[in-house]
Structures are given as structure tokens and as C-alpha cells.
Length: 382
Image: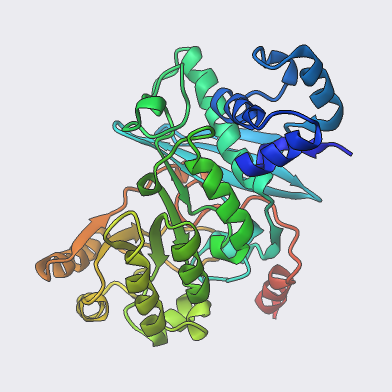
């Protein structure tokens, strides 16, 4: 049986090489070849002895999830669909901007939390992704963007590098400067695999991203937020979407287990060890649901004791969602109330909606184990 090295961290690679009778420095070599260079063939690893390369070819692989589809939007946003087996596929999205390039990564095939305005949640849930399937999305994107740069494609970054922190001298001029765990799934519901993948993203021998440039978005699993603070604190974003428990219970059902007061207390605790001195609250703008001036004022009162930024997200429609996007004037009025209360509030620019790559639109392909879609179809036909 061969070992997939793609999802192994430095310590695990050292243990792997120890079993082969090799020195610990081999782990650093392999990390660089796999993640810096994007190699999936041991034969190209020229600073590794021929004998070891032949041995690795027999006992190991570098196996990312197979690529099914690569789509580019009119605004340059790029979406990949990756096969994670048993008729499941997940999506990852690259958003290029003039000063940064952000990759949005999935953590599960589907999502069990069923937020009412999210296309992924409507697909149901199949399983957690492995470390190799999570980090494989970054591996594929880095390789694809490197190839495009070599061919003269436009965008942030150069042909030499594809991922890293522009502020890090060893990882300058790379297309992917930021990673957000905001794709399909609830990252903290797949805690161990997500944290293992985060550590690879942060490892200088792998992707060399700084903690400030890696953001994990959660719907509010309070115990897991505390674990993340202690084990691998990165930038934190929280899907809030409502100023009170009554509405949030409807929009984000996990709120019934971890209500807003408990969630905000966890956010305050998290900031003690976070790489940034604030939490980002994400707030999708739903017309006539959560976008009134009165609700903006209530939101001010709700979050006033939490150092935060609020990111207002125009709702991105999908079939049978039951919601419509707040008009720009309503979003502006809502934002003005927040800013007048000295809160930092921004409105997210919608990107990639023509290829269903915008926030809340990722659906992929999920073999639902929850029967959620079947129940909805039955309700719809009654």
C-alpha cells in the first residue's frame, strides 16, 4: 500500500523517512518539491538521490483530488471542481485583485449546518475532506496559476511562484497571497483535518503563509473556536447574519445550540491569541429579512463589546432560495448606521457570480447522506 505524501506535515514526513532509514532533512526537501514547486513526480526531484527516488516511486504517491472542471468568470475569478470520490466533488475559487490573490477552500463535501441562504447547505452532506483533499485544492490552484503565469497570463503574481505571503522574503511575488476557509462546509466541524491543513499552509517549507493571511470562517461552533485559539489561531471570520437570536435561529440553525451571547464571548476569548486584534463578522444582506435600519441599530448594540469588522455581503441568488438581494440603497443605509456608531463596515464586492463562484453559491456535487434534498423535493410537490 502506498502513502500519499500530499497531506503529510513535516513531522509526519520525518517519521515516514525514518522508516525508510533516511535522514530528517528529507522531509524539508519533499515539502519544498511538493508544495513550492508543485511536483507530483519523484523523478523530477533532482536533489534527491536516484535510489531514494526509485524507492519513493514504489512506496509513495503525491495524489491530489482529480480535476474535473476549470472555469473562469468574466471578471477573472476562477473556479475548479475537484473529484473527491464516490460521486462527490467540491469547488475551490481564486479571486484575483490588484494587490492580492485570495483562494477560497472547501473543507467538506456538502455541509450539515443547513444555513437557509446558502447553496452548499441545500446540497446536504456526505463527509469531511481529508488533509490531502483540503491542501490539494491549494496545490492545484498554485500549479494552475503558475502555469498560467508562465504562459503570460495576467494577474497578481509571477511565473516563478504561485503561493505565499508577499511580505515574506522567501515567498514574494506569489499569485495566492491569502487563503480563506470559506468554501463548501463548516471548517470547524472537520477540526483535525482542517488544522492539519492550516499548519501546512503556514509551514515555511510548504506554503509559507502568515497567520494574518489565512482566515477561517465558521458559523459558530463555540467549543471548536476555543480549540482553534489554543491549537492554531489564524484570522477568524464568523457568519453572524442576524442581530438577534430569534432571526439567527432561522437563518443559521446552529445558533439554537450556541446562541449569540455564547458566540460573542468565544470571539472575545479568541482575540487574546489571534494574529489580528479583531474578528470579522460576515452579514449576508437579505431583502426584507435582516437589512432594515432598525436591525442595523440592533446589530450595533449586539456587537459593541467585541473588537470587530463587519463585512456586508450582497446575497447571491440560487434556484429556489426564497430570498432576494437587498438593493444597494438598503445596503448603504445599513452600512451608514454601523459606521456612524464607529464600527468598521465594508461591503463585499460580488465576484464570479456568472460561474456560480460567488459567496454562498458553491454547490459542487454531493451525494447527500442526510436526505435533505429529498425531503425538500417532497415538500415542494405537496
